[in-house]
View 1 (tube, rainbow, N blue to C red):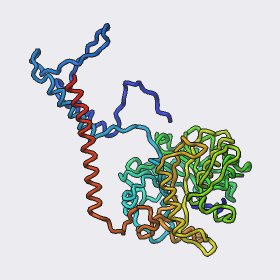
View 2: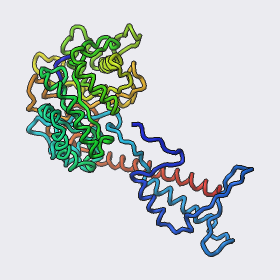
View 3: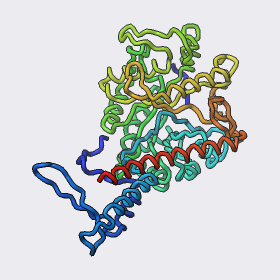
View 4: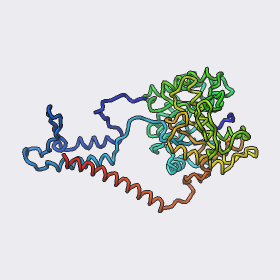
Length: 460
């Protein structure tokens, strides 16, 4: 929630391409073919250095030309068809697909059921979802959904899990083992915005909880597929302007240093909650609202790096990169665990309007879909979880806290970003056109692949 303060895979031989996922049916199919269709012989000449694929002939009739090309051609066409139907997939796991995700908060008494939420996310094509607990109804609903789900250990459990590794194992056994892998749990988020808060005991316990959860996953051989992390608010920074002057608070380094060492070893990113909305609200006289909303504006020039920034979101990320670099972690990725803009708020929260919320979220989504980096880290693609999926009517605090949703509690659209809501009318003709385009694309791809194999077969 908003804060008020502003593996590298093992190297394999170039000739060895292990099959994974949907390539297995192809392997089984080829093994079931008659031997005379799949046995080929290659001979080489040391002088010419070339290979010749021998003719495939039916067993028992050597010397004849019957089946010289037809079985080979048939086999190639069948391989082409099966590859199109069962494409090979890489074995490497990624905790975040694409660049766009959403926070699914549930502090409300009027939200759609978890199965309806899954349908809404699938309609919106949002692949990455983060929740703030490990609600079993949500974990069940996400089974076989094709969605990445990051689950969380609430702040209230962090001290116990830090003090006792068995508690970490119990938590994983209860909240991960019964669901994974049918529920694609991509990450376990330990606590939220702990550093910079008032509870120093909780801050001291954070690293222990993170390590114990990771060790529990490692014991179950899940540590390479499920990431362990913790998000931070802007309160961890000593300075953030200009971006090149980004630093962590010296008094928090006693807690941050072991966390950063651990994430550096596991390859995990640094999660930060970045809210231009809150920064603008804290100083509207000196911050251009267009700069905060990613609208055209003069921007700022960082005098140290000579880099130009036309929006605060990228400036906040580069301030984080600068702080990590100064702390000794220049290669660590920064990932945004929360960002958003409220569509409504208290009378004093004048920037919390429907128009501003729509503008920020629209521009942010467009920027993320460009799959580019920041001015200081141009090759590091920015990834972000949007806050939030729904307006949540039972959240405490300022009125804005209850109005960050992309959707209303009934599943209808709150911000017009091109999403379809659960209650909005959908056009059957549009769905038919999209389905037809999908079939046409698949057929064209299949025809292209088959043509290539046919040419190679005839040329053999």
